[in-house]
Image 1 (cartoon, rainbow, N blue to C red):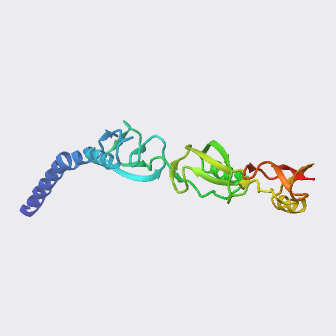
Image 2: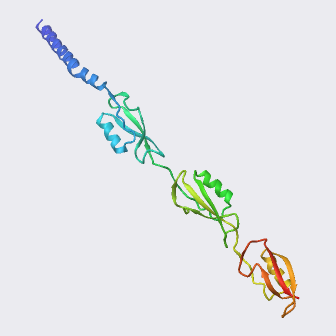
Image 3: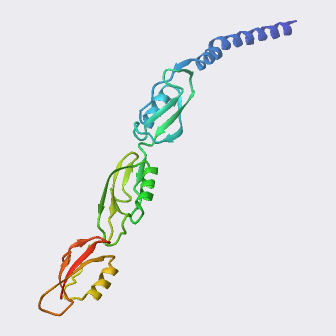
Length: 234
């Protein structure tokens, strides 16, 4: 009988202890773990600072994506999920999207490329042609790109402007035809894609058939297809 009584007493003691632990230790811990808190706003804050703020609020910040952004500076938070002021349980993971800053592009080498093709490349890169200039060139054929401003390999941002310099063709200077005869000057002009328009004879001293006046004058800048007039001794 005594043994039974002792056994019952032990059971009661353990029961009382169990109730005490359940009410004053276990349940408060469970309740505390289920407490809701508001998610702080970490948008447009540097990543390190955002992680620290979340940690201070018993939340865990995790980077899920990095992307280019025209507004948010590099290494700052673009988006957070859950959103600011959302109520969540302690220990909740907050997903973060971090900015890589404004996307930069290196200007490609376009020298020697047809303008239309170069224009397509420039547009495809998201750049804007602000100005087009044409100059004579001894080395770049007409209609092809000589250079760009800024120069190739320069880092620029999408939407930035670029100037394109196009070749007007080879720089041609009028050859000196003085003292030469018509058959010879015909060969010279043909080789330069020039045309003999007028041959005027005049009285004068010197060898017959020799050029004494030419138009355009020697060394004047000319274009392929231009016409030439000469005066020769009759």
